[in-house]
Amino acid sequence: MNPAMQHIGLPDIDFWHTDESDWRREAAWHLCAQMGAHSEDVYCASWLLDLEYELWAIGAGEASPGLFDERLCRDLVALARLVDCWWFCPHFARDRPNFTPHDRHIGQRRPVDLATWERMRQCRRALDKASRCPGCGRRWLA
Image 1 (cartoon, rainbow, N blue to C red):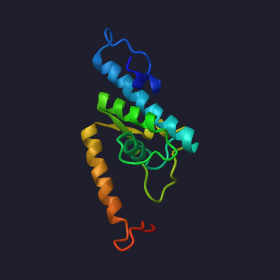
Image 2: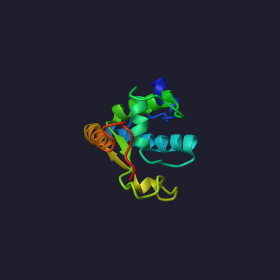
Image 3: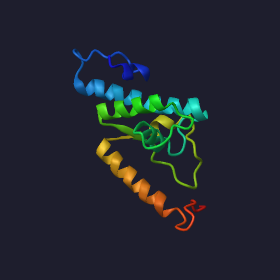
C-alpha cells in the first residue's frame, strides 16, 4: 500500500480482487470521513464552514497549514486525485451556523468530481475578491 494512503488510515483494500468502482467508492467515503475527523481534531466540530476549501488549499500547497496537519492535508488531496472526488457541504450560507450538527452531517455532504471542484474553487476565489474592500483589502461585514 502507498505509505501516504496508510498515513490517513485508508483500509487495506484488495485491489486485485475488487471491482475498480468498489474500491474507488470505498476510498471516496473514507476521504469524506477523514475530512470530518480532521475538523473534529482541530476545531472539535464535525464540518466547519469552508473546511473543504481550507483542506484543499493546504494540501495543494496554496496556503499555510495553521492548525491543520499539512502532511494529512497533502495526503487527502492525493487520495482525492486518485479517486477523482472531493467532498463539500452545500447547505452553508452566511446566515446559518458555521458547523454541521454531528447527527446530520454525513447526509449533507456531497461528492463532486475534481473538474467540478476546480470550478467551485474559481467561483469561490471570485466571491472572496468581490467581498473585500478594494482600498484596504479587508473583508466586508455581512
